[in-house]
Structure formats: C-alpha cells, structure tokens
Amino acid sequence: MNRMTRHHREQLRRKILDSSRELFVTQGCYGATMDDVAVVSGLSKPALYRHFDSKDELCIVVVEECSEFVESLFSPALFTGLTLEERVSRMIALFIGLAVDHPHTYAIVFESDMGHIPDVADRLHELRDTLLQSLTVGADEDLAPEAAEEFALRAEMMLAAVIPLSKRIGVESVPLKRDNLQKVLFETMWGGLRSAA
Image (cartoon, rainbow, N blue to C red; front, side):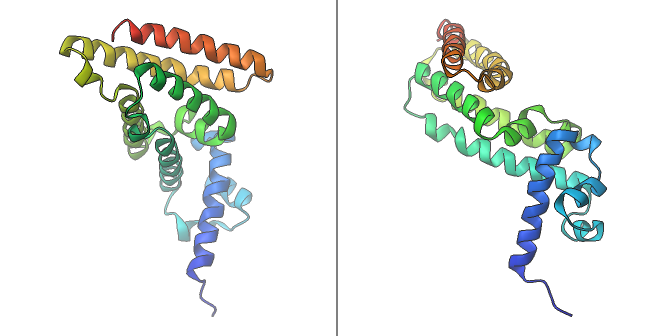
C-alpha cells in the first residue's frame, strides 16, 4: 500500500482548511457539517477525520490561522514610534484593507459564530488585546495614570466601532465615497481619542 507523503498530507490539510474557511463564512460553523466540508473539499469524511478529530478542532485551526494573519498586520511592533494620530489612521486603513482584500479572514475573525468554542473565544480575546495594544502602545508612558485609563477605555470603544464600520466602508464601490467615509471615520475616532490623550 502506498503511504501518503508528508507533502501530500499537508496539501490535503491545506485544501480542507481553505475550503472550510469559505464554508464557515457562508454557512457559519453551526450551519456547516463535516459532510459539507467533505463536499466542498472534495474528500471523503474518513479522509477529513484523518486530519481533524472534530468540526470544533477544524474551526479552532481556521480561527487560529486567520488570527495569526490579522496579528501580522496589526503587530504592536509596527505601531511603535508612531504618533497616536498616525496609529489611528494606520489602524483604520488596515481594517478597511483587511475587509476589502481578505473578506473571508475578516468574516472569520470578526463576524463568525464560532465564539461558543472555548478555545476560539480565548483566541479571539487574545487577538482583541493585541489590536488594543497596537493602538495604545506607549500611552501608559505618555499619560498620567487616570488619563491612560480613560484613553484605554476610549481605545476599546473605538476598536468596537471601527471593526464593523471598516467593512461598511470597504464594500463601498465608489472610491471617492470610500475615501470620504474613511476620512470621516478617522476624524471621528481621532477626535474621541485625542480628547483623552
């Protein structure tokens, strides 16, 4: 019997993950079954279970990959040395770019129904903390303790608003209108944060 090469196993795993990500976006983790995953990936259910023990495990791996990608874009190290105004502007542009250029990743991380899985909920919480850290990097050194605490709260509210608004702006088909919406979002968010800084 021919044993599957490591490279071939990795290719099959990649195919399952890519197919699953798209399926979870369209049907949700709750709505998709392993039968559905088998159909979209072109594999049998036994082949799926050789790679993943359960749908939850598959969901966890999909979220982990998407989260790692988002973290690579929003790494706090990439925001170090920027002024607060520059950090806000960059973060908004990155969120809009993520929604436009990587809609499945955006949907998995920010809109999915997978938060019921404890490992997924923990991972998404870690990601949120990374995003906040990117926005607030250095604020605790630049501000008095009370001001830093208020700034952190405002940053958290800004993040909660920017995530869905970025997608709304990103789907705008008229570039001039998209640019104007991005400018208004920046001015609104920057105004709210600046008053605490």
